[in-house]
Image 1: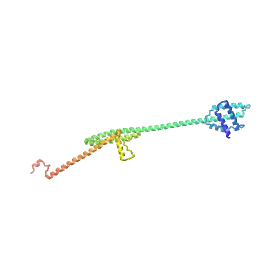
Image 2: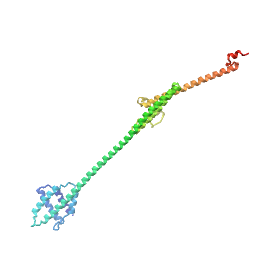
Image 3: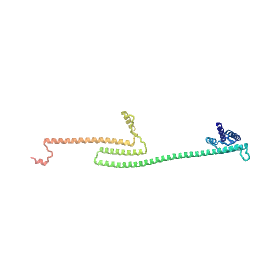
Image 4: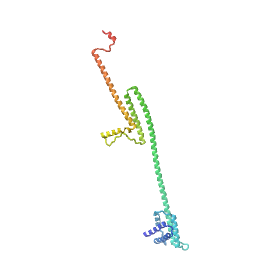
Length: 314
């Protein structure tokens, strides 16, 4: 059975791949006769349709149906010459070859049609995959665009809020300064209050701008972050010296807060010193007054006697 299958497969393979030459056509006819003899196709025309279909479907290469049909036609002509028809009836060998030819042509046509449908389906699937990928990218872009628009809207609102707070805060700062000048003329107290209000205003503006930047996903470098690997006096001193060495690289906010901090501390020291001086001065004045009153009471002298009363005195 294996030998029969090999002979049929060899015949079909040569029929698909052989060139249309006389030697090839003669060889194919001889191979066909061998197949008919071994597979016992005659006299009952037992054609191995299943085996032919299986071979054609499992054949890996491309089958050119036009070349195959042309080659089988030439083999059929040679078969008619070798096995001529008897009056109006075909020779059994010719009739058997005709059945072979028709079924081979049918199986090849079916295979090519199935392959075409599969290729078309594969192309459609690939195109659908490309369309899905493109749609996914477009959806991602639309999502990013929407997020960006929301972030821009929030940023614009935050900028306007910052401007409004800065303007009104500056106006309030100026009005507070004028009131302080009217109520208290001490320069140290004025510097302290103005510096403190300026620090609060700058901190508020800084918080708003940092919030806006975080919405836009901007990463800001913290200039004064201490390395948390080791907390010791040496580490703190190293961080402090490095920070002082990079004063030029500090941000405007950091420099402004440092300047305002110095003003606040200096003015606070001046206020404390002035308060102590006033206290000591008032204390000494009260002490002198008490001393004078004590002396007058001991000597019997009344400093409140009018000159007229002094004349009328006995």
